[in-house]
Length: 470
Image 1: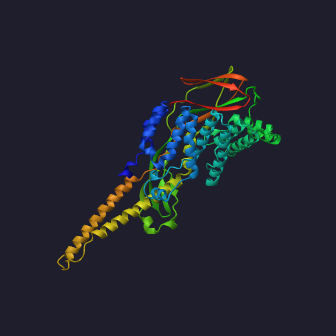
Image 2: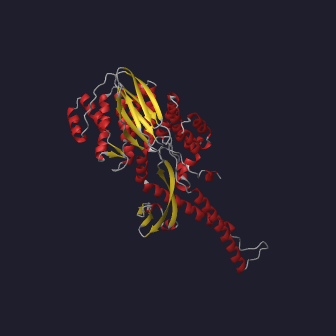
Image 3: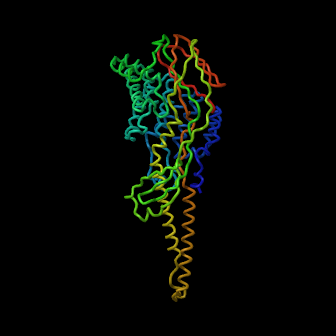
């Protein structure tokens, strides 16, 4: 019964692997991932490649990391979705479909690839990722096309600007920073759980001046009111450090009872408020819709994982620095699920409709097949009592088949709970001025400490630090 076996949540299937990742046992985690038969299936290839890419990044094996992240990137570009995927998702269980990735996961593939390239000294590779970010932004914008929805990713734009600064393309960096700031300003200074970073304000105004856009610099200084930038052009350049902490929220499943009223379908949410569900009535007739007057559907939601926030300390060359939030996946993922809640429920409702019709169809076919002839084997006609008995038996067989199909349908009604869970919950960043020559950066988060040695070369260098545990 392979269909039933696939019904456990993704979190349960990969729990041992993620425990090893959280503990920092990356080689053990890699061995578990490689042996996990569920992750070897074609439909889960994207998740397998993303997890592999992240693991090799954590191990400092940047070439291998990009080998897998490039495979993930290629699958995302391919957007492989067969007719079989559509049928399985609409009629059985969306976890049987090919996983195509969440929009924010696609941006984070670019993030890790860019960091890998920079660690390898491959500036051209990092520049390509900056351009790929723009293509991903454009694709997301085309896909959404609605206000008050996730149309662009501010963190990706900030990263894009930093990469362009690294490659010496200051004008492009200015455009990226400006696009990011515009997103924040359009959303009242807070975008998916992150307030407009002070560093971003300063980077925008500095690159505007460097690009000769004095009017733009003045306009955005007035609009964002940045704190004075006390450090200008340090001799050794800058280290931009990303600090990753916590574990990305896991997708879990929640069930809703859907009811058909006079004006369509609706459900009562966990907040007690009635929510209408849109379903295209032109696709289904009254009889079909009557089959699902009351039904239960399963949809995914993001469950934030507990995390004890350690005190973060960053010091370099006798000065202390404070990191700012730049990505909050707990807030982002929760909002993304809210935005598409109606679509998830409508898809689940259609799935139930198809199952109900299959149930009724199976019952009718079984009843017809069990209905015996009106003539006995000796050629004589059956009596009315014998005919009634045959009809009762056929009806019972049809009902039994319908019940069996109903049980299978109920057992397979599951939400798609797959997501890239080795991602962090939070990303912060800090820009540290460097002296020419050797710089020693001291980092601590709770009982975890790290020392980073950076050669100040006059340019901008990007690195990340992963704070383990929760």
